[in-house]
Length: 407
Ligand SMILES: Nc1ncnc2c1ncn2[C@@H]1O[C@H](COP(=O)(O)OP(=O)(O)OP(=O)(O)O)[C@@H](O)[C@H]1O
Ligand SMILES: O=C(CO)[C@H](O)[C@H](O)COP(=O)(O)O
Image (cartoon, rainbow, N blue to C red; front, side):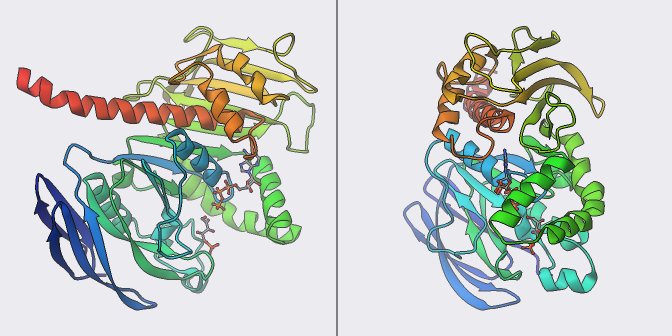
């Protein structure tokens, strides 16, 4: 396999670079560098011209990892997260219509399916699933995430979910925040070490099954048998390669069936736990009433309307894979989203910018799945914590030269 070359150009006060496996030629115009890149892929040949506006060295990209199995709500979470930063996230303009990338003013979300080294036919021939590390190129994933983090644009491959083929690459410029989402953001130690914050969406088998049926039967016309077969076929590799990543996550959102309805098998009412690691740089776990205490709270009554089976919050310290954590749990669902402010006002360390910001975000996306329960609520809170983490990192970088000058 060809090795990537970093082509670098100096313009005005800043440096511009691109990491690519194909030959590039450079041109200049003010603070923009023009890269003429010949693209080559297994399927097609084409050539492209990329214009990159240089960014200065202190604007290094903050990298966030989001891991989960397919169909576990990553896209929904991403929409909540990018909304916290404002502006809509869209696929690259004028690019491949089947691109998996989403770009907004502050964030670029790349899907790690793009690092599948085997296409659909290749996986079938070799008898491996997409979850198997042998079907993924971790060297390239590491090389490219590292390059982006260092402010270098890359030519990232595209896995086309429509055709099942690997399409010609697309240019990814370093954003302020890069989110890498998919099956394996924390699998490879080198990639894991590049993450400034990591999240794992842990959906229990019962709930995963209910969501898959809802989407793949209702929206994609799959049969119940084929959905069951696909979940069963993925299970061994899921257990071996995806699930163990949760031990590395800074925050885990665990989604389980409710305990409020005895023997519930409908999977509609959920018990959601937000497991937050203690001692993570730039991240202070959220707490209910009193930090570090163990608390059980049923807020239903005069201030919060609750129909059966009600809502129950629990909070307290715990250990998770040998790490000290704080766990906030919500079992049940909200009847009226506008009343959520009552719950919000009892939580601390939310990293909101004004009173009621969590409730405002939830109301803004009331139509997203999970808006009436802990999945949407905790995803929104994690989004606000990521904004806070980003702002703290930027502030500490800005302060660094001042500190250095004082020394
Ligand atoms: N919080 C939620 N509550 C209820 N259902 C949900 C929730 N999140 C996701 N779902 C269901 O799961 C489906 C998949 O969600 P989403 O597209 O966000 O997942 P994904 O992980 O990005 O999937 P994929 O990787 O397959 O594209 C949705 O169509 C919806 O039916
Ligand atoms: O687990 C997955 C990640 O979303 C997909 O199944 C994997 O990417 C393979 O894609 P496809 O099913 O389109 O061939």
